[in-house]
Length: 181
Image 1: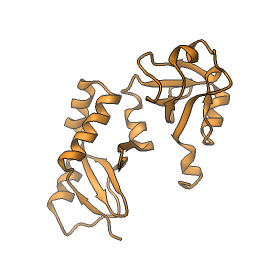
Image 2 (image 1 turned 180 degrees about the vertical axis):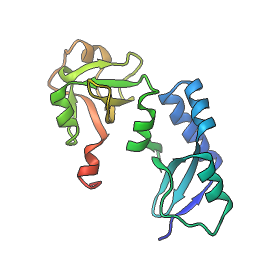
Image 3 (image 1 turned 120 degrees about the horizontal axis):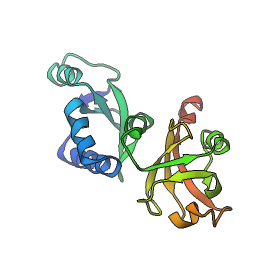
């Protein structure tokens, strides 16, 4: 099935704006919109790509062009909304405060689809609650993936509940090595 590239509809734009507002400040969001464009690639599923303005104009204005892919995969639209991809997470990593820094041992586990215990979290943003997503980084602030908070923040910071999952792995860079399985 050929992939059709098109502009975002109003609902997709709203979901993108909501997702960006969750991760980054309004100033960073305005800069991201000013410097880039977003385009939908629709085939078997609906993907969001971030492209430069000239690529966007070329794809949108020339129906004869039918590329396999464009730009960087930024996310995928699901029934629940926009799910950030590894490319999207990596793009936002330097701009977001919603991060969890994990130790070296946990880094290896996380990259193999494992969840993280509170004792392995060295630092975490203070404005997150159970169910919130965070960018997971190592001690060098290198992007590893995206996780979901499973414990109360105080329990994580104080390492109170060290036997239960504190951070659930949503997606990690090891996905590339596992061939997307």
